[in-house]
Image (cartoon, rainbow, N blue to C red; front, side, top):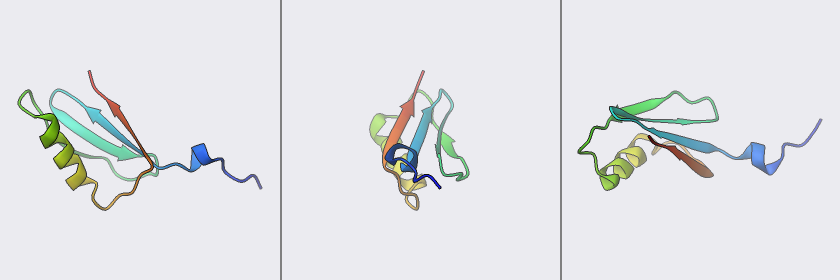
Length: 67
């Protein structure tokens, strides 16, 4: 059996910043979580909400996508 590489063993938190919602998910099969965004959501508020939603998750790296 092959030992997994470091790259495949990483836990990746993916954050999708959309116009109406911010969605978060990991590559470890966890359910997607989300909250409403909108034009008045600041970067600071978004980080605070993401940290709150994912407080019981662990990750090694973060990937962020936004329009």
